[in-house]
Length: 587
Image (cartoon, rainbow, N blue to C red; front, side, top):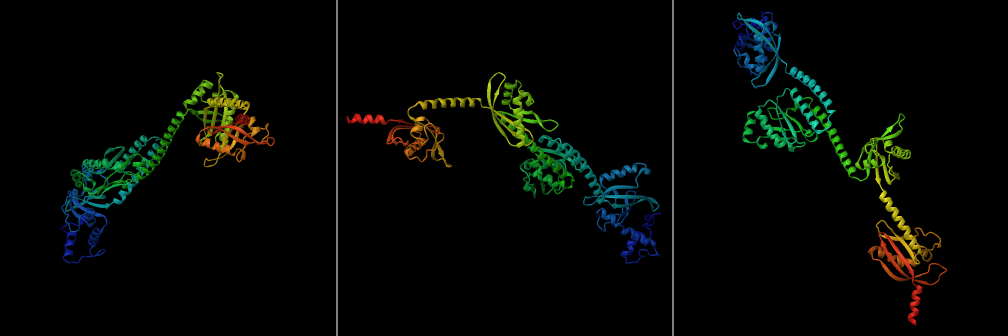
């Protein structure tokens, strides 16, 4: 016989009779009293922290205060005769009806059910039930324990396990991500999985510009549609700050949208795009609770996902920046007329560089290789330069650049198989990745032009030597601000050295500083004028003889002309001509 069987309503010591006695002020035995042990059991049931319910034919016969508290029923409310199903959620009702239709021997001794409180909250409880006899008829005695904390802990552990699985798969996939598009796909899959792990309903997604937003919550689809419309108009404009609307009116919603949200119990809401919006290129996950606030705080592991995606986004952005930089670099070297190549050292077993492999070559370099070795797609430096002297010189340049970790430059003549001669300027520079960049510029036209200029210069000087007049080429000496402080002699013919320079006639004038020579001070002023205006000077001047053995003065016809930054100065002795003119005038 159970306790509930002994506490029949018609017994004087039943809970209802004892309660009536309390109201009338009648005394009854206390706990542990040997006079009436039933009173002790009565108080044990009333004070039990577990809910105790006696029900028969689906209706409540008795419920202690703990059971009433679990169901959210205020003290003083009479529940006798109430239907048990009224305090159970729909899933539990289906569960119990299925158990009632099955074999009683298959029914578990312990059940987990959900109580539905009067305020709508769901309380998970664990129930142990046993059959009893009440007033001669079968009944059920149930003991309930609130397991909210246990369920939450189990949910958290399950979610952690689920999140760990998601993160393990996510991290594996993130290692292969190289583009923004791939990152977006992986992020969407991870967000969907985490939302499903949270048991949130994934009601839909919307695309706003380049952003993709998911909405998972318990709202009806029309509510989610409103959120999608709001997100489409607000979220794309955000980068880091959340969009908060304290009231529905402040969000600028239509009347229909406001009505929809108000019916769902939403008075304010916040859409919080994470840093993923700007850094991970537009992926964000948004859920809303009944207050309209994001539900992401309940998604354990979501921050881990954000961190993983954030780091991958940084890596992808860096890779894309590198690719773009490489593309810009290659475009630049393609546009350059110089040959350009990137070579990787080929090492022997001892780590010595014995060859080099072409990793990249622009079109100009391919043309040079075509002319030199007949194969523009050659892969090894040794194949491009089969001549031992060329190959050995190239390897020495490469090793020197790698050893010193600084660029080297050289000018060399190359003899092509067709017999043509080419001059090239080579620049070899090490890279941070252990490779080498090689720039080859064909300077044959420059060399030929220089040779032609040198030949013309020699012919010019030979002509100047045969001239009976004194001839100088002067080059200005400039200070830091560009002003001319003096001149040096770049060239002086024999007549100039004999008449104007202090050197012996057979000595090379070289770059002789003539600044400050009193005899030429006026001419140097004229040189400044010609250099400044570009207008030549053609006049007759008198200079004292510089040679000690030649006394007196000499008259010269002076011509000064500028060519670039050089001055050509000619002194033609007209002393005898002026003397004859003077005698003619006297006669």
